[in-house]
Length: 124
Image 1: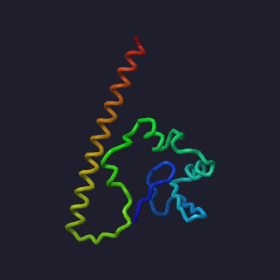
Image 2: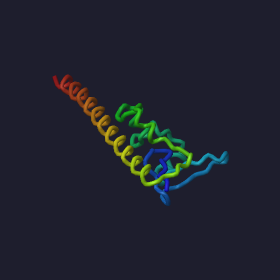
Image 3: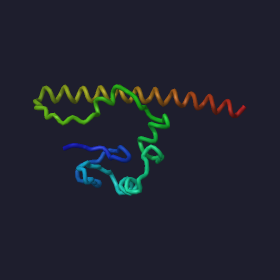
């Protein structure tokens, strides 16, 4: 079972959900809901639509560059798993997730610190 990413908003697209659009050149686009599909058909840029992940990353509201994003990349090479390897993989996934959450927390705290300083400056 593979959980795809929505082409427009980058949210998870679970099997059996959403819409798959296949262009004439065989490029496939997965959409999590009709809202994303409609916006794609209207030729809207995800970086300019406020509720998408692309918008949040371009505006500096979320981490844009981080080494933990390498682990989310799609790999097409099948891997033979046994019990030991599966256990190690799950432990590694949990470790990467905890590192990612800590970095996002620090990023958010720094952003809010700058925003608070700006707010105080404007209030004076």
